[in-house]
Image 1: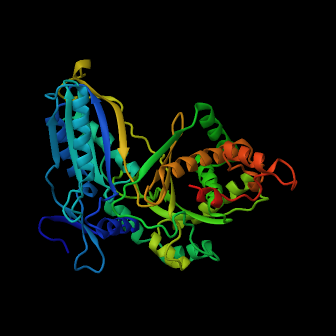
Image 2 (image 1 turned 120 degrees about the vertical axis):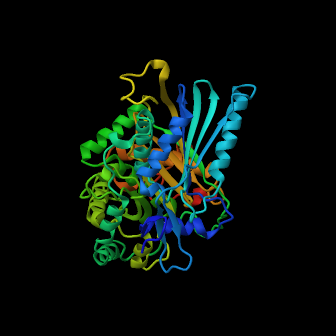
Length: 482
């Protein structure tokens, strides 16, 4: 039943339920699911016009205005106010003595905004900050709780924000919005019993979870750190060409490489890790331009067979995901219950396949007021970055581009920087092997780093047993050295 001042009361998606639990678990700790997207803008930014565009954006999308209530309820809900005040902060830093001081102060302000918790019951769970660094240089941030948005939705929000800025806050030029309620209705109509059966079959006979941080104490106050690596243009082209040759996606090759590495790290031929699925059903009209949290986290189980060619393992992994595609809407809690395990994994692989296409010039003058904007009147996004984290000890994020980048988010309280850097080097080595020759048996994929292989050869020689030095080697003992 609707209440005064409310536009709607809606259920939560499975992932929203999980994120809400993490957000409420320890209200004193930093909320790792508060994200921040920062844009560096060149040109004469009109703060009043940009704030007006933000207000129009909040009015346009109900999913940006929601709050979450759980106290006294058997099931949490998200409430949608009819309107919210624009959460806007603006600061002029040009009075500071030099660029270094201005950038330091900007970082200080944005860090404080990023670390400030949201009251999840008090919408909106989003904040906007505009910092003036010079006459034609600004830094703009969008800080939000992941409960509201996924990565694709953030791209839609940024695109629409600058379209609204260019049109003076007039949303009439934008396409009609398909309400988030349409997706929640679709979700409610799905056959959960069939999905539970499918996941029960997929995870049957699983001995236990795949945990890299088993038995290690985790701190609620720990924020993940990052290790990054970038492939060369040639390596990226080879990866894309191999995926095309095999009739697979690049994400399947990345997942296959991670499964082989995880298998060696844990010394197990049956591993599970989490993957993020888009969750956008194509049968909903306008789904590609909707804003909200559509993604879901589901497990991916991979059985490795030493004699099986890598290419066959990749094809098998692809078929497994296709078979489970109709059932990816089920929540992780229900999937774990179907597997009769309280936990399945503590590592994630995320493939970010969405663009943040805001690197264009725009003007704050409406086209109806002026046919074209002079170059001096335009603003342009010249740089951008996103700060987001998760609670998992290890999260591998693939960032496609002309040169593909990988980011390994690791919790330093359970996985130190040196170990994370070494693991990333191993991952790249395994990925190169997967891309290089898919006919190679899984058991022959090299996971030892060159210096480790040289150390083994020096200690034991290249002969003796007649077996390759790396045959059957697990990484457990190597990681124990850290």
